[in-house]
Structures are given as structure tokens and as C-alpha cells.
Image 1 (cartoon, rainbow, N blue to C red):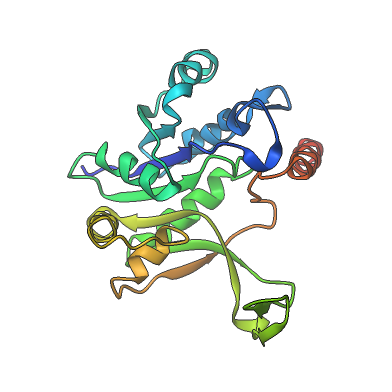
Image 2: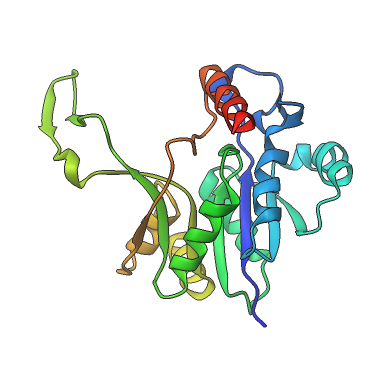
Length: 232
């Protein structure tokens, strides 16, 4: 039977956090950020195996303090990341078998993801060209071309903030990344590469807790969310 794979991308450089330690290895609530992320996919009932994409210089560290320590059963392979996120995802896709069913691509820094949200996204992808976990935008969005002068105000009712996982049939996401690689198209997320080919992507309601760790404040917020979850 064809399997569903997750590609967890954790090859970021943590430039905005001014940290000597890559953010995926920062400990929070007694465990590295990346380990929290893997936990959710290990517990997902619809993800069969996982491919991790890590900075090449961090691969051995990842094996030692995360994979071997927590004895994850679904992690199939660890591959080296690329220069940009899009290149890292492509490296992860190349590690998947050709008979893969669905591919759930997830940012390793979104470590508050839950197994329930993963499964909801995967289920929605079975009968679609792909799905994006997203939440409605709460703030009014302004556009400015230069000099901080507003050039446009968008209708907030139509705007969604994309999160991950983003889930696609293997054949479609491979086609999208192959085409982007040949043409030099750079997308802002995985779905944008698929949209570029004319496919229709569905939205799945995400969670305000599914934040991406990019600043030190995000770590404080994440710790608060984890503490609240323990009290439930």
C-alpha cells in the first residue's frame, strides 16, 4: 500500500534569533524544538514515515541528541538542506520513493503542531490537488511599494495566513518542484509552486497556536502555550 510521508524542514540558520545554537536544537520544556515537532508526526495516525531535512553540519548532532535519544520509529532518512528553503524541500522530495501517496511538508520550527491538525490536513488532501493549513488574517494588511507610503489596502475578509503542514499528492508536488527547478521560479511556500502550475489548493483551518519560531519572543509565547496545554 502506498505510504504518506512527511518532510520536516529544519535547515534554518536562526539569523533573526542571534543564537549560536540552531533553533531546532534549542531546548524548551526539557526537549529540543525539533523533537517536539517529530513527536506530533510520530503520533499522527495518517503519516507513515518521515524525512528530515537538516543543515549538513548538524546531521550528526541531530542523530545523537534527537533521533537516537528518543528512538523515533518513523524517521526514514535525514538529508542535507540546500541554500534556501525551496532547495531543502526539493532535497527531501528526492529522498521519497516514487510510489509515495501524499506528502506533508512542514516547517520544523512550527513545533506546536498537533497530531490532530496533521491528520485533518492529510484527510482533506485525499480528494484534492493539495491543502494548506491556514488561519484568517486578523489585522488589516497594507501594501507599500516605497518610502512607506501606502499603495493598497486589502480586503481582510479574503486573506488567510498560510501555515504548515501543506499536503499534496506526490505526483503533483514533484511536478511543481521539478518545473520550478527548471524555470528558476521561487515561491514563498510550497503551495505557490503548485498554484503556479494551475492546480487548485484548498484551505484547512489551522490554529493560532501553530506558530513558527523566528524570534526570542516566539519562544516565550511557545512556552506559555505548552504550559497551558499541560494544565488541560
